[in-house]
Length: 382
Image (tube, rainbow, N blue to C red; front, side, top):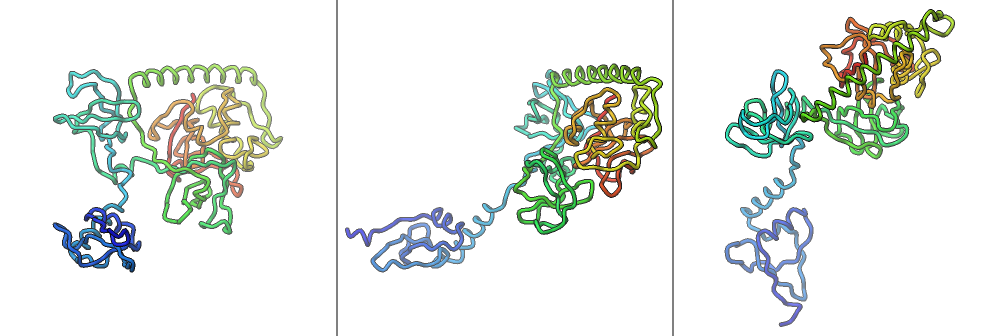
């Protein structure tokens, strides 16, 4: 048989695959029926190979089916589709078997996320963090994308030494602010091609996707071993911080100077209120990017770091890292001296719904309402 006139058999699935490529040209010889697929033809190529669009020569009915299949295949599955959220007063126990007699292997706290692996009666087998086990289905809400979005945070993590946040999604626009490497920023919009809108202290601005990675943050379950380790770590941190603060207070006993001399009164005790009072002495001093001086200028994390250094407590110079120091408390349980973390920003709570923070170059160190922007975490040292 002449190779230039060989017959090619195709199936409906093959034609559907071609259709998903859009209008890629294919070679067909029309009007040769294939059993079971009247509009999808067996294709012969001759010396006068004829190029036509993939949708040509196909009956409208099959074309519609192929088009619908292609459209369905092109729909991206939601990132939240397989997420289940705990809805309880405090936490629900995760057990090693589907029943109340199962041993507790961890805790799934309210608004924490899990993936449902399977259903066994009125129990779900879930995986959350490092915990796999069973929870009663009545305590978990599955398939609620809006709830999953509400309890999660879309994060852009910076991967360059200093990243400019711009007022518009273009390198020609003004710089709204700067953020350091490894900073985690809350994403507020992703509709601009090549750019992501994020929240920083100066407001909302744009960062290039070339310098950030994106993720979704959920709270996950805590295993029994993780809970025990956390409680022990928090107790050790409290003890170490208290001892350091007492040593610092003793060393500074009786030493004080006025703010007008460029210094402030040294702390005399080791509790949160002392931290808050000490921090407030520097209101009005300048904001300086990368700075750690309470008098000559500090940025937000430098300010928190320097305040706590006066109490003998070493903290990292990073607002994202500060979200992991000490131990976490609920925003409703905030006390003076607590560290309040926001998207790309950090402050110290001083009581009465107020924070003190190194805000921007325009405002310097000042006070603000604690709820002036969404709170990501509250951490307690003392």
